[in-house]
Length: 294
Image (cartoon, rainbow, N blue to C red):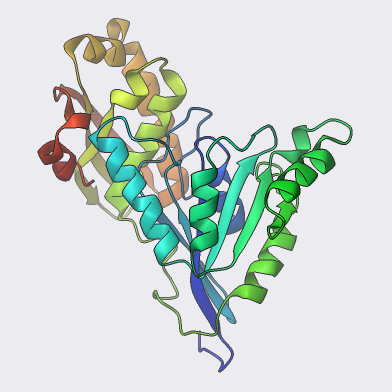
């Protein structure tokens, strides 16, 4: 794929509070599932690139953790990714859900102070009734008259083509940043671990998903099958018992769901083994966070 003289490329960074649909939007714009999603806050912990290639452009979408007031070391690391995304953006997508109010004005103001243009996305507008979406747009416009507001539903892919058109208008003329055959900056091990972590968020309640971390310790690819070993870490022995479940039924369910998603993503059969271990208070320990890639 050769580049024309007016080839466009840049970083389009998605920021917002937890659970507004940032990862769902990334997947919709990529037309491929790159980022894990769930209806629980703080599902996304890392900054993750989705690289969309075309003969005329390369868009590097960046999914970021939901912006929060950090309560412990892990959340401090997550907020660091958000600040970096504001610094290196060519276009900022600031995202809220339809029902949201202006409860975290600091983040909007940080985005507006950045050097990149900001598109304010009001997501989940398909769930609105009557004039709710119109009224909410006016609510934000009154608070921030300079905002460029677009209404979308990332889940239903409503308004996403109009958003893509606007992004391409704002994107700078620049050579591609990544090879044209790459779709993400993350390794196959990282993707595999994230798929398992998504299933933990789907299948467990209360503190279990937030106390869990997944590390892929072995990734061996053959012609028709990939052998993957993964360790699931929790903070307490009681959590280990919950993860495994009665007669290991819970961990088997997670493994089956993860394996099916991995087979869809990698296009090969997957042999997955999972092991559950305890790493006490890992979210509060800098050394352990570094070991886990934060």
